[in-house]
Image (cartoon, rainbow, N blue to C red; front, side, top):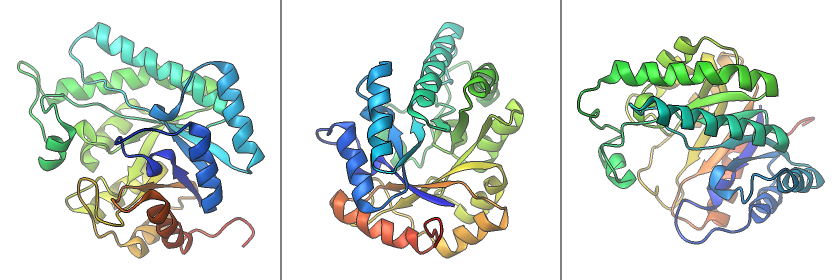
Length: 277
């Protein structure tokens, strides 16, 4: 396994953002091997800008291995779903230009709970839109990802579907989508901090299908909630299924990022040794 850091770890959708290259520099200074870039930190989709980011990471010995975007396939309108598919396709191209091997995508959610803070208070549960049901939403997500799988394969970029609320708030929903798509270019992104209930059973169910891992930490208390995650147990599960890929730190605590990321690095480095050590 290899240890990387999401640029999200330094900015939780609150306050001003720094330039992306500043977050890359911070990941380098903290000792990570690679970086996962959040969509909101990409300042341009232009080829020149993306090439510059890739080069700056290379100069620091960092691998840009993943990009994380926000998309939503849970839309009754076929035209709106088509636009979401086109958005993801553009980001596959951008990830390819950055040298990334994976693109984090979401299944989407109904949007009947407007506030993310309220959604977290409801533990990720929200009612469907009137006239529709869960089966409709799952089919929309599966069909959209089936359309994208050939694009992902053409570019060599795996689509990593995260357990990120909405349809994938539990292991059952996430695996229903992965199995429904049935492509080696669409796998599970296991966020160990996003299974609020029955955490370890759900981690064990998703682990065999995992192509990327998000490791949450909550120093200073969580922005929305905190889980007391047993990383001894979690890494035993990952090793037990032969997982050898990237583990991304997603620091989500209220302590200052420089402090929380440093503590998180020390925690996770106990489980993931640098190459050759």
